[in-house]
Image (tube, rainbow, N blue to C red):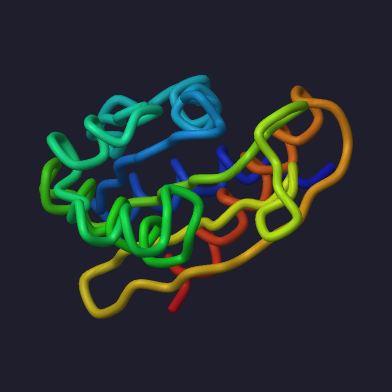
Length: 158
């Protein structure tokens, strides 16, 4: 059986003496929860911020107000700013961020329920991905955490 992504991530970070932080909106801390469920996570996991409100995104993650006004909280620009803000705030080698609409309400034609932007900031670059997930709120949150950990793992190996 293949180890879950969070085990591989914590093992890799421990082996390389690198660190990670999280900035989560629609996942509500589930990514940090999964990482910290792994024994030995205390060294590589620096911390996380659940930034549900725009004020928290601006004040704790340095997301520019202009970005939120122009593109909205659910946008690639906001995901990128959240990841870079978390990396700077925690001084970590990597930061993963997610922002989206977990439902069941809140979606629009332009931004439907299940739309999520996620980003991973690392020393040399920040990568953003767009996903549309289906299911109920809990299912969407699980899918978000899995995709975000996969994006983090992919970026850790670059």
